[in-house]
Length: 155
Image (tube, rainbow, N blue to C red):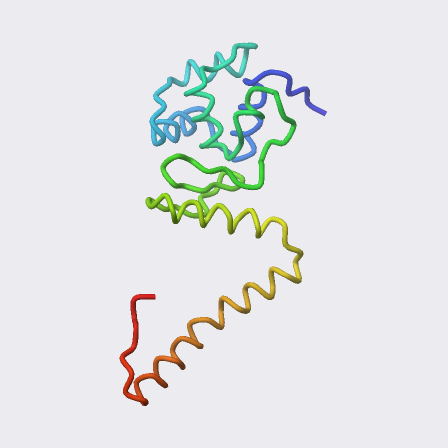
């Protein structure tokens, strides 16, 4: 088993797991406001240097990890979900959801945390319910229209 005892070793493992090279990683980091060179990434992954908190947060966001993992405080490389201040919610490096509204971000975060606690059977029930909601709404809208009640299309 590989010894991941420095931030650089952990960063290298994370970007290799995502099949990224250092150039692609630097490009993605620029996308979250962290401008570093390939040479700096190479220096980090080949030494025991620690990146600044801003740079480490960029790595954690782009690589779907956490500051605790990057800084060697945790052995959990991919926490259940990671929220970026932009409203992006990432899981294992993949964008799950993006919301600009803080209240929507809070609701989404709560939903994802709850989802992570559900069993497979419970998740199936939730998906079935979600699939049924548009059909139920359409049926209710038709019924309202037939009974002369205005339909509310804002929800």
